[in-house]
Image (cartoon, rainbow, N blue to C red; front, side, top):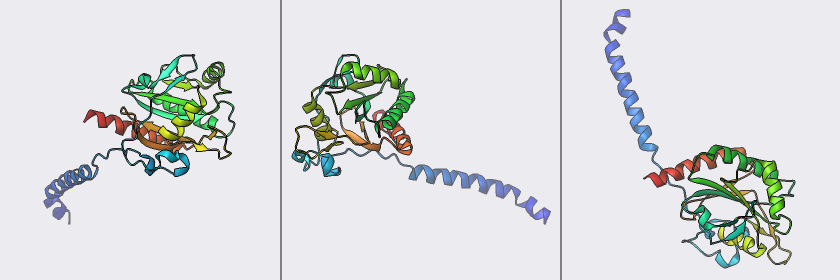
Length: 224
């Protein structure tokens, strides 16, 4: 019996090596790069999308904007030019999902702190409460790095339109009031062309991990 195994030892080693090579080839073939989708209004729940664009199937991009951050600086789309960024909607006095979302944003900030291609952008849905001073206090409390993460306030109509016509992420509160909105837990991943490439539950740690993975996939897209 021992002589039998000795006779076939060389064959077994060669067979083992060939098997590893074949498995590696199959894995690499199946593990083909898959680009992230480009989200259009027709791909998103209608309750999150303004009725005027619910029919739109292509060419959707984040609109130009001009808002003010926690330092009183005017922030526009030019501050995010050629950047990948994660956006959300919140308000500083929220005691339900916002603290979790903000903690997860801070986690993302830690992961991308040395990555010059990636930034964060949080919009207040209660700009009448979230003044520059209030945003500054909140930013200090939550560990916001000013070079990576802008908390912005401004004209309520503009924020409402950005939320429902650009980011496709906020519900109308339905009471008939002008520009009143109910934010959701959504985080949006936006590419360098101002296109939405992913939606994530900002209260779910597993979804945050998926978002971080998708940032790397999106970065790979620009390397091809």
